[in-house]
View 1: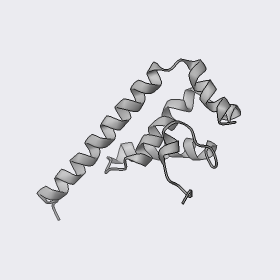
View 2: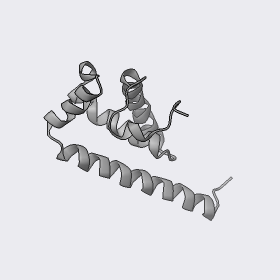
View 3: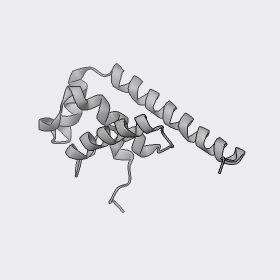
Length: 106
């Protein structure tokens, strides 16, 4: 069944919201010095989990959690991989955008 105009608008709005949020977080992260990122982890008591190579992936996953939308198949696979990295470190650990999520805190 083809999508209606209303469904298309909702889908595109979700994609735009995700894109804007991902861009904003990428700009925020790129403006940070590595020492600032390390300090975020140190304050959260999780410095031992900091991995510079995975950090951007975890930040991307946080944005994807905040702004879910209908991604393509290839993007879904990447986001699942990034979510794994995020969940691997953050069971009880909130940093950056993750602090905005309302998981199990109600």
